[in-house]
Amino acid sequence: MSLHLIIGDKRYSSWSLRPWLVLAMTGAAYTDQVIRLNQPETREQILQFSPTGKVPALQCEHGTIIDSLAICEYLVERFPEADLWPRDIAARAQARSACAQMHSGFMSLRSNMPMDLHRDQALEVIPVDTQYDIDRIVALWAECRAASAENGPFLFGQPSIADAFFAPVAIRLRGYRVALPAEALAYIETLYQWPAFQRWQQAALQEVEA
Picture 1 (tube, rainbow, N blue to C red):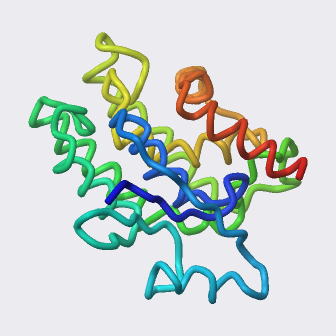
Picture 2: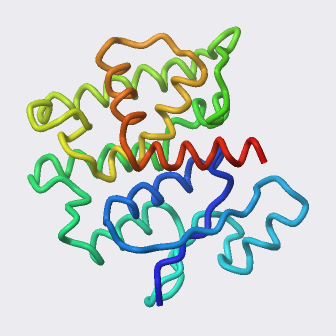
């Protein structure tokens, strides 16, 4: 069975973007299916593929895999040659820690700055808790880059799952025009120049026009 990823709108669905980018990193053939979010029929449509009623879900020869991080870990095992995690054990541990923090935290940022690839407008006031999240993310990016900057412009030099997990954050920070240090702005630009990211972005803009 081929790889088939069920996702939400590319304009809005941050959790869908993450495994989609990782799938692109594998170089494997796959298809995706977009289910529009926040529609009367959304949950019923997703339940055809995922018992949780949430996206993303990956259909493959080993069954249906639910949750973005679980999908990414499956792809690590399925495509070991793709180096989806950093090769160095210390960097790999740091990358996993960063992804775990993103997977379970930064709730204020998620709530007050939802991902929207069409947005280009600052908030009048950034809530205090949201600014705390932003400050922690900027510090986390700097921590990741500190040990790997000589290997390339991504968090751990070359693209990894960590970059896929923070790509939706980059969209938020740029779309809401958040003031950031130069190093953080440079990293966001790296993500926006990433060919896989650009393919998603273009598809999202086409969704908007439709």
